[in-house]
Amino acid sequence: MKETFGEYIHRLRADKGLTLTKLAAALDIDQSTLSKIENGKRNVPVEVLPKLSTVFKLDLKHLEHEYFSEKIAEIIYPQEEPKQLLKAAEEKAKYMRMKNIEQGKINF
Image (cartoon, rainbow, N blue to C red; front, side, top):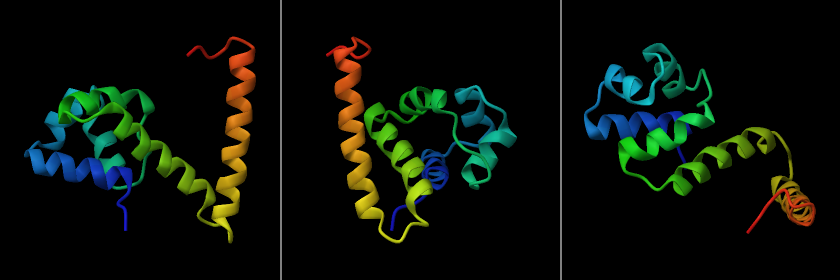
């Protein structure tokens, strides 16, 4: 079973021996905000991910996968057939990416 993103941050912080105050300062957020994030009462602002990556020396792509997979899971977990929903979303994402590439909004 995977942990929530907040639990993941808490584990990383504890493993590194950082206090809430020190990590909050490194992330440039309030200590109470970090506490709420770790306890699942508040979402992590996406802007914090690069700072988390630096503090914990983690690959930013890995953090983004953890972060966005949780966002998707929050949307689909109540559904009876999440696999079908994910497949449909994958097809729509491919289509949207193709359209954005055609319109010059995404460059590779």
